[in-house]
Length: 81
Image (cartoon, rainbow, N blue to C red; front, side):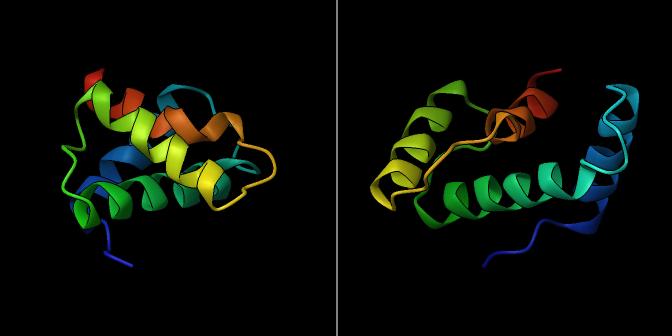
C-alpha cells in the first residue's frame, strides 16, 4: 500500500477535528482515506478530482466490499474544501 505523506495525514487530522468527527470514528475515516490515496496512486487517478471517486467506489464493489461506509467519500471532501 502506498503511504500517505505525513504532512497530508496531519492536515487530514486537522480536517477531521474541524468537521467534529468523534475521535472514536477517526481511525475508520483515516483507513478509508489511505485506501483512496493508494487507489488513486496505483491506478493513476488524480486524488483531488471528483471523477476519481467513482472508479474507487466501483473497485470496492468489484472486491465485494459488503457495505460502503460513509467515510468512503469523506477523504475527497478534504481535498476540495
